[in-house]
Image (cartoon, rainbow, N blue to C red; front, side, top):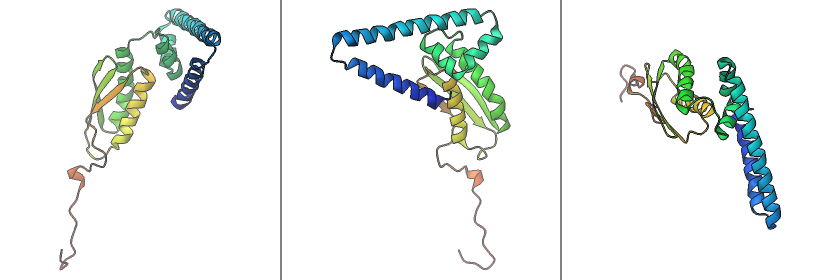
Length: 178
């Protein structure tokens, strides 16, 4: 399941919850809410137990916790085995080699509350599509830490920006007036 499919499911759940909350019958609304809460409690307990059982094998626990779908569920139920900072640091380490091949260095500046600050630097200005770099960084961070509200990336070139070293003066043909 990818992020857009996961998002579609969450929107479907939110619409159903909205419908439950508009039920005119107090008893029906109360019963539906109790059912949802019981299912959430059961799922939360199962997720916590799964983390507990997998904690004996760090490799298995990491595999499960790194899966974008499962990661989101672990965060939702508050039982993710790795801290937000650890997940972001691991993600940056995974991104670093790919971006270095493209001439871009990546540094985690901070993970304060629900804001992640990243700094990038391109060793070859003008050779990197910054929109693609930004998208790759944001997607990887959102998969590892869906609870992050903001991702601030310093060092991106503004949209449509052309570095000065990429602009070459127009050449004139001999005898041609400008």
